Image (tube, rainbow, N blue to C red):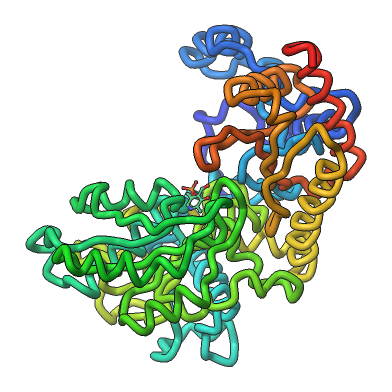
Length: 488
Ligand SMILES: Cc1ncc(COP(=O)(O)O)c(C=O)c1O
């Protein structure tokens, strides 16, 4: 075999990978050991110095020791999601071997948006989209590996994140009601209705689409920020009286702050009756579809016109990877009316290109990452993981609810739970101060949010190794922080 002289590769391939693998193994082991910090934040100046950013940038790694030190220092300065006391954002805690497809992709760089630029990745994307469509009842083929165009099938693509996915789905919704918008600009009378607690990416999408944030018509929510479906008719009537056309109705499945689900079935009936596009933002909670126990939470999702589903939240895929799914396949074809003659082929090519249907021109091998998440343990392990996460929130709820120092506004439906510490004594600023004290201690990582103008501490149970023991320790840690800060 004739191997070209590899002058560009200063470091030996074999040992380099061993160094990285060993550093990652140590990282995981340390994340699991007690005690260890979840997050130990330093300033960017300190981190840049410790990483020796400037000399390495200028000269490149000079030897394997330098590489080793760089990786170790880098890993020290991370948020340790693998630590069972990470109870923070809706970001997947991946399987220990989830990085392998990223490594492969980083070596071969086959973007999967054009089939011919990455046939294997595009095939896995097609397969995973079929699998997701099947969960929604939108795949009519007998075999997930049947890639022929079955007209009764829904359609979908993978894209880089829920925000882009919402933009994609809303773009398709606009094409359905105002096909001229792509050429002429957005008609001024179009609006989108949804719970006032819709994720900000919905409003952002409307602004990007030239409709303006004001094109979002909020529907009232209840005390736990779930949409009040009885209000839909009134809001719709008023909107029409103002001379507006409703382009889509959006539902939270589930809401970002609370993890509670809007009643999809009722919203779907309303949309059907009024012939309105129904979009379900299932970024976090669409996974409930996979569990017999929790599927009722998303009852009615099958009646949507479009659904988004983040795999980098609850399917254990490293960020980013989101599916945009359409019940009727033509609707996806309309999402971006644009022709790029060098990339958008007619019928002369094999396989499928996702490029015409995404914001991105080039995109990562997203299907491979998603497939890999299942390949490591199989489909039933994923279902177990989801059910376990939802159960973890119930376990934490039981512990907090039994403690008179804590207030939980609702029993959790998913794996997100908000609560306050002594709300009768501690104000909003102090709740926030408690969070910073806690995360700066390094012992836990939690988040915070506002529900109806009141500040809450917020946990998202993403780590399969977190247990009730950790939750009792969390209670003690918060009490300790409160005693230190407020003498209470
Ligand atoms: C309901 C909902 N929709 C959309 C998004 C945006 O997703 P991403 O962070 O992948 O852009 C989020 C993120 O938390 C979300 O919770």
